[in-house]
Image 1 (tube, one colour):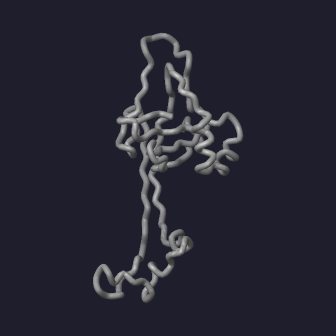
Image 2 (tube, one colour):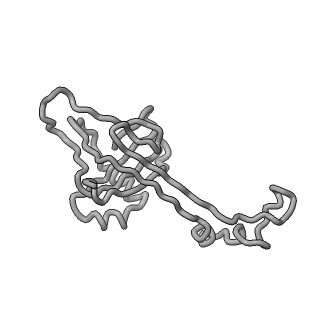
Image 3 (cartoon, helix red, strand yellow):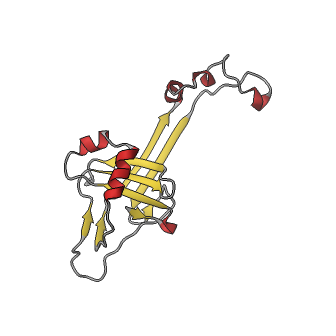
Length: 157
């Protein structure tokens, strides 16, 4: 877990040495809490994370309809009369876009900074190196709300 500025947000990096696909497909909030409960605080001499950037866009009408609000997207049927006094309004599209960029300056999406540097010129002894597939989670620490979740399959590219 890499805490960000003001310690309100952090990035969790799950770096499994094996069974990446199993861990990814079985990841639930309960499993995440189990992983966090097993974490111990360790002083690291160095952290190596690759630079990565994600820009995704999701069209949410089908998902929201399946979750139980299909009439909001149909006319006639939708009732947003509280907004304009008529029943002529309906939702034609819902788009969710997420952008995450992690580089040597920090994490742009969370508007926070997480930079770790090694001390002096000695060879790092206790190192966290994300050089194989990993899952990253940016979350609010107090509530546990997940703000961003993604995976890096090939950190060398």
